[in-house]
Image 1 (spheres, rainbow, N blue to C red):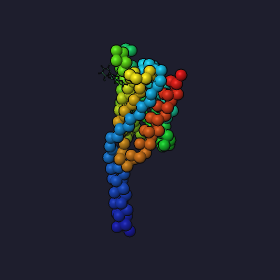
Image 2: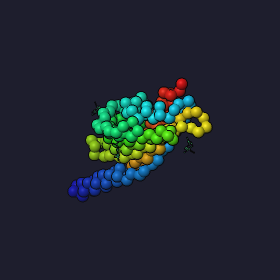
Image 3: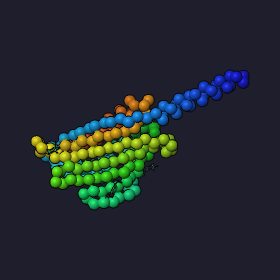
Image 4: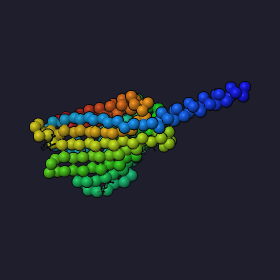
Length: 185
Ligand SMILES: *[C@@H]1O[C@H](CO)[C@@H](O)[C@H](O)[C@H]1NC(C)=O
Ligand SMILES: *[C@@H]1O[C@H](CO)[C@@H](O)[C@H](O)[C@H]1NC(C)=O
Ligand SMILES: *[C@@H]1O[C@H](CO)[C@@H](O)[C@H](O)[C@H]1NC(C)=O
C-alpha cells in the first residue's frame, strides 16, 4: 500500500513538473497583416485605430476597457489601458491585459504609427504573456489611398502554438476586415 501511494505521488509530481514546463517554455512568434484603403488619407484610419474605444468595433473579442493614463499632443501621444478580452477559440478563459500605446505622426512624409506593448494575464494574474504591435499607415505612391500594415510579435507557450496562431490570425483578420468596411466609401 505504502509503495503504491509513493508511486502515485511521484507520477503526480512528474505530471505537474511536465505541465509547468510546457507553460513556462514560451517562444516568440511574428504575424504580419495589411490592408489597402482606396481614396483615404492615412491619417484617417490612424486616428480611428488610435482611439481605443474604436477597438471594440474592430476587435469584438475585447469586452471592456478603461484608460488609465494619457499624455502628449496630437503629433505624439501616449496612453495606457486595461482591458478584458474573451478569446474566440477559448471563450471559457477571459483574460486581463494591460497595454501601453505610443501614437506618432510624421505629417511631412504622411507616415503614421501606433506602437503598443501588451501584457496579457490569465489564471488570476499568475500567468502573463507579452506582445508588441507596430501599426503603420502610409500614403501610397501609386494609387490614391492608405497602406495599413501591422506587425505583431507575440509570446506563446510552445505547445499551444497552433492555438495562439489561430487566435492571432482570427483577431488580426477581423481587425483588417472591419477597418476595410469602415473606410470603404
Ligand atoms: C511616451 O512614452 C515613451 C516611452 O515610455 C516616452 O519616451 C515618451 O517621452 C512619452 N511621450 C509623451 C508625449 O508622453
Ligand atoms: C470588465 O468587466 C469584468 C466583468 O464585469 C470585470 O471583472 C473587469 O474588471 C472589467 N475590466 C475592465 C478593464 O474594466
Ligand atoms: C513612398 O515613397 C517614399 C519615398 O520613396 C517611401 O519612403 C515610402 O515608403 C513609399 N510609400 C509606400 C506606401 O510604399
